[in-house]
Structures are given as C-alpha cells and as structure tokens.
Length: 449
Image (cartoon, rainbow, N blue to C red; front, side):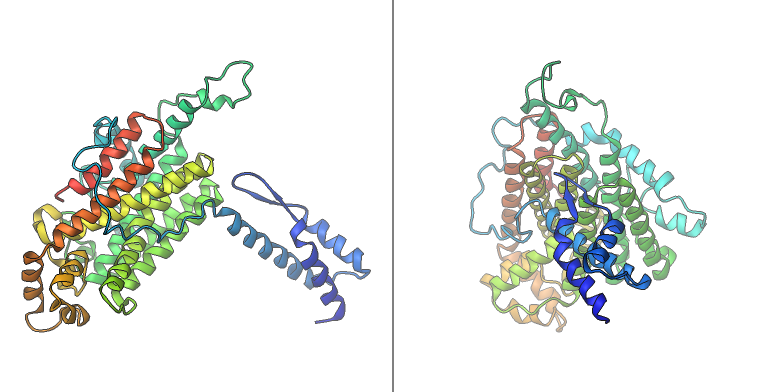
C-alpha cells in the first residue's frame, strides 16, 4: 500500500468514532461519508485515489456496524442464565398467581390467529410455482390445523400487554401535558408491525419443523403426514428455505434493525441447536449432560420465543426494563414448553401428540426424563453414551424411566420455568392480555399434547 493510502487509513481510524450520531432507539445515522472522504484527503494534503474511496468507505461502515451491534444489546442478560432451576420449589402451582384472572388466551386471540394464517397462506407465501405453493402452505390451510400457534399468540398478546402497561402507568394526557399523545391511544386492533412479527415467528417455527422432519426421517407432524413423505426430501427442504426467505423479506420491510438482528439470531440458534442435537459436545458427568441438554433446548425452542417477545418490545420502542420483561417471559415460557414436550414424549400417544411417541429415545436422544432417571439408575449412563444403539437399549431405557421419577422431575422443572415466565409478566400492570399470557404459561405445563 502506498504511503499516502496508509496516511488516509490512519486518519480514518482516528476519526471513525466521530462519524456516528446516535438516537435513543433503532438507528445509528451516518454523517456525510463522502464529505468525510474529502476531509480526510485535505487533512493529509493528498488526493484520494479513485479505487481507494471504497476502502475508506468500507472501513467506516464496518466500524458503524460494530457500533450498531454493541448498541443493540439492550439488556445484559445472558441467554443461558437461569436455565437450571432444579433445586428451587414451586410457589403458585397448580394455582395462578394472586390477583390474576383466568382469561382464556385462545378466546381473546382467535380472530387474530385466523387472520394470521390467512395472511401467511394467501399473501406472504404466494408464489407462481404450484408445487412450491402447495408445499409451503401445507401447514397453513386453516387456523384449525397445523399446530397450536403458541408462538404467534405470545407475540400478539404481549404487544397488547406492553401497550396496556404503558397506557396505565402514565397519567392521562391533557392539552397541557408533555407526555406523548400516543399514550392515550386505545387502538382497536394490533398494529401491523406486530402482526407481521407474529407471522414471521410462526413461519420460522414451521420452516424449522420441515427441516427437522427430513433430518429425523419423521413420518408424521401435526397429525398429518410429514411434508417430505408427500413431496420428497428435496422439495421439503426447499419449501423450508422458501419460508425462511419470505420471512426475512418481511423482516427487512419492517425497517427495525434491532428486530432484524434479534430474529436473525434465532435462525443462528436453530441451526446451532440442531447441530448440538446431532453431534453435541461430549459432556462429562450428569450435571454437565443436563446443562448441555438445557442449552440445546434454549437454542432449538426457547430462543424463538424469547427473541420474538423481545422484538415486540423493540418495535414498540419500550424502555430497557420492559425489553427485559419481554425477553425473560419468552425465554422461560419456551424452556417450559420444551420440557413438557419431552415429558409428553413418554406419556402421550401418537394420536394426541400429532407425532410418534418415544421418538426422541428411538432417535438416540437423551432428554430430561432419561437424564433425571440416570441420576438414580446409573445403568442408563452407558446407554446414553452409545445413543441407545445397543441391543435392547431402547426397551430397557423406557422401562427404567417409568420406574424412576424422571418424568415427574421434568414436569417440576417445567413448572419452575413457567413460574419464572409468570414472574416476569407480574412486573406489568394488570390487563386482560397480561392475564391471558399468564394463563397461557399455565397451560403450557398443564397440556397433554
């Protein structure tokens, strides 16, 4: 590199920190990059080579992106903190927390869920290729089929709960008030951004299922034949890719950088969780095995709930304490959901679960019921290490799990996470949406399918 170019880079590095004008929330604004180029050139007394302008510009933009990433971290919460609550005791179960009304979350969000499914099917996933269209919309034929829609329900209800909290926290706005007039706005339906986020959340989840079923060679999902059994593995994988692509386009159009970052991180976590499941790190000791299992659950299940809830707070431009509430609620609700799923894999029937029972164990996976059972029946440990591939391992492991308290301890841990989710919501002012979310957290652990 010529000496003049080196001098320009040196000045560029010194002034980078002054090129950013920060706003409180989403955007980090760049201030006159081309003018900065001219300033750099004049300050060192040389002309800027034509091909070198891009180098300087990229250096400045790289710095800005690093600053953006740092500023987007709105809470100091480690996503893997507080996952192991094994030694705590329940406080509410089987009752709701004091002062919380038993409001049916499905009843108050059912109309929005119907609109969501119709929008995904008829708008977001519309394509000119008939096979891709049919494959991509396979689980979106109606709100009645294709899963419980827990994830978009969380987004829709949380957006209202946070809005209601802000509305009831502040004094009513008067003509002389300095408070924003938005605080007195009683909106009859959810804002479009939150509806779009709910759609993205459900599409992310569905795409991950399409890919998982191919990887696991599953033959049933949501009481329907798995997509790859109807269209083949190649089309199933491409349909999942198509869903993710459409969701990412929707995210980009929403125009909120923090939300884009959070939901992109979900995709990273989904892949990481799946790789951990296929070829996880070797864990030494039973506590270590449980910790690895909980991390995998966070990446595969809880991350989507946690970061979509956090994105609700981002879109509403709420303060950091509400961003933290949203994140903690989603994280612990997600952990509870997966733990119950793992318990139901032993207790439920294929008809109730919408997929084969004992599927995880037959695939060589040691979930919480097995890991807890192994703490009292150490003969399970070598079976876990060889992924239940030995002759009679699966049958023997099932028999041991049912003789142990592994399933019960899994449910207890799920209840503890559900209570943590409720605790987060109790920091919000009472409202029908808040109480419906608390009821939803209760139902997550009380469900049988």
